[in-house]
Image (cartoon, rainbow, N blue to C red; front, side):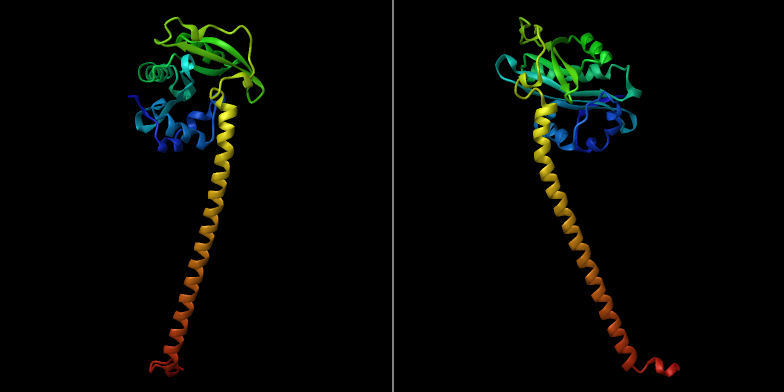
Length: 241
C-alpha cells in the first residue's frame, strides 16, 4: 500500500536511494530544507511498505500577476517503483494545490532536452513545451520549460509557445533556482555550516581535553592517597616482606 504524505526532515536522511538516477537533479541539504520550510505544501513523499521511500515531489509557488504559478523543482520515483503512476499522482497533487489553494495560472517545470521518456510523460499529463532554455543544465545541456495551464488561465495564454529560445539570464526572477537561487543559498549556507562545523570541532576538542585532564588529575590524586595509606597504615606492605 502506498501512502502519500508531507515530506519531513527525517526523510532527508532516507531518500538518497531515490536520487541515484542520473537524470534526477540533486541539491545540497540546505536547498531541500529551504523548500521544506517555505513551501511545505509543495513537498510530498510516496511511502511504501516498510516505510520505504518510493518517490517524492518538491516544488513552490512564485511569480506576480498572470505569471503567478506553481513550479515543480524535482519529481522522481525509484526505479523499482516505476510504471505504477506514482509520478502522475504526485504531479496531480501539486497541480491541485497550485490550482485550488494558491489560485495559480499555470504549473511549470524544467526538463533536460535529451530526457525523452520524461518529456513524453509530461506531455501525457497535459504539459506543452513553452520555450527552450539554452545551456540551462550546468551550462552544457539545453532545458525545456514545460507548462500546463490551470483553471484560472481561461484563455490558456500562459502556454502559448515562444518562437525563439532564451538564455538562463532571460528567465524571470525566481524561476531558475537550479543555477541562480541555489548558488546564492549555497554560498550563504556554506559559510554558515563551515562556521558551525569549526565551532563544533573546537568545542569537542576542548571538552575531550578537559575530560582527559580531569581524569588524569583524579587518577593522580587517587594514587597519592593510596600510597600514603600504604605507607602509614598498620597494614603496610612491610609486614609481608
